[in-house]
Image (cartoon, rainbow, N blue to C red; front, side):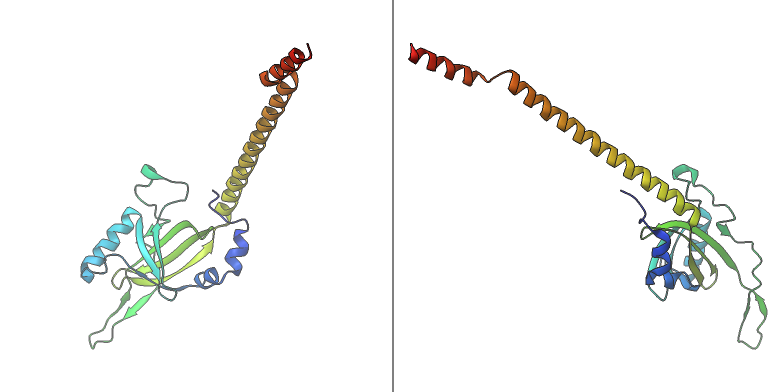
Length: 204
């Protein structure tokens, strides 16, 4: 079964679901919601370093289980995510200001994340950042042109292979039926021979 729809870009650009999520919107970490906040902070960071996490788009309630690795890596190849996909070190330039009297202005502790995936039959890249203290942030979906072309080629190859197998089956079936018909014409059935013999015996 093909993993993608026939016209991925059209679906991404025109379907309301993708149009909403292609604009930067609020996201949050959804793992271990029954645990204390400090424990969830640690679990989130550990999960990111392992290359995975559960994230939700707040406005739509869309929950995603993300894998922070290139799409062409599988199984044991996925060990430690590269900085391109999980980045704790990027200079953010963002500041957070506390409202207390002793407030200080400082930079947020943020992790930047990137996760390619196939969502509803469309190749996309999830991109976003999450505040390591608050466990929320901003994210969006981006159309993955390169992978879309690769998946389209795989889908076309699978379609051609299925069509070839169907033709082969039909050819074998037709050949078999033609062979049976030829044998019936060349070798009359035993019942016909016995009937002919009875007719000859009565005539005598």
